[in-house]
Every structure is written in structure tokens, then in C-alpha cells.
Length: 264
Image 1 (tube, rainbow, N blue to C red):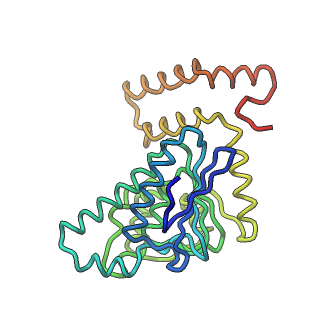
Image 2 (cartoon, one colour):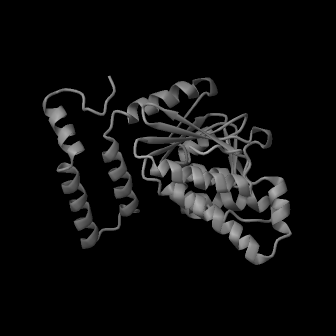
């Protein structure tokens, strides 16, 4: 893995990559360098066939405070074309995280504002502490959560996302769970144990099956029915059943034993 200045990556022998936002002094706020490094890091994770899961976390007191103040000041002085380039880079990051082939789990604590909330929304699953604080804060400084908006809508629903984008209200981990942004929330002192429980449960599942399931549900989207989609879903299950992993999983089930991918 590449050495980064705004991030760090930890590789677990079980096939888990933990990607840490590592600018604790600025509460892990985005700048152009961090966005570029996140894109590179996700490309490396995508290319590593041995990885089964990605966990996204933040060092220090907060998950991600949104955009870095110094970076915003610089952006304000740039012309439209340069700002469009910046926006395109952020869009590339969100797209790569959302479409990463392996399951992604965000673990949230402290403040998660603006683009940080977008990162959480891009992950397949997210858990956090009860006292975590979330905010789509852009309108407070005359901006809008534009690039992250499609992912926030997918995570929270259209009308709810609109409310919080317009009001810039803060909400805590319990409210985030009610809205669907978090799958579960826990007392801060129980969060680490919960992370291990989530990972242990995910590692019981077929690695390739999880990749296929992720691709399947992204293609299904909101569930609109069509003959083409029906044919695609039929192809998914037929292909998985005849795969080596599918055959092993079915055989293990019939023989009442652990599948080969479950570590003893």
C-alpha cells in the first residue's frame, strides 16, 4: 500500500482493510490532498482480490468535520472552471466508494458534517455512537451539499434529505439510526466491541457472494420491475449456484460443516 499523509490503511489477515481518515488536528476535514489520496487508496483496495471488507473510520475526536476551512478559502478565489474540477474530484471519490466491489462499513463517532456525511451515505452499512453528531451544514455558509446529494437521498430518503439540507439541523446517532443513515448506534464505550461483532458476522459469509449481492442490489436500485431486470436477477442466481464458492457453500450446508472461507 502507498504511504499517505492524510490517511492510513491497516490490513487485517482476515481480509479486512481499515481506511483511517488521519488529519486529527483538523478533525479529518477534507482538502484536495485528502480527496486525491482517498481516490488512490480506494483504487488500491479495489485491486486487492484478497480483501473481503473495507471499514472507514476517523482518527481523533471526530469522524469528519466536512471541508477544510483553508481549502474552502482557496476555492472561493478560484474561477468557475477550477471549482468544477474540484467538484469533479469529489464526485469521483464518492462514486468510487459507493461502487467499491467489496462491502463497506463506516464507523462514526464525534462530528460528521457535510462531505463527511456523504462518505457515510456512500458506504453499504454504517454504525456509530449514540452521541455522534451529523449535519448537512453547507447552507449555513451559503453553499449546498450538491455532489453528495444523490448518496444522501439513497441513504435517508428524498424528503428527509431535503429537510436536513435546508435546515442544517444537527442530529445525533439515535436520530441517524431512525433515518436509516446508521444501521445501529451504540454507547460510545461499546462501539469497539460492536465493530468486532459486525466484522465477525460479515466474515461468516461467502466473499464472492457478498460482492455479487452488492452488485445485484445496486442494479436493482429502488426495485422497479421489468422483464430485463427479471432476466438479470435470474442470471445472477444461476451464475452463483454454479460457481466454486456457491458449490462449496451448498455442500457445507448439506454436510452441516463450516464453509471453507470461515476461519477456525
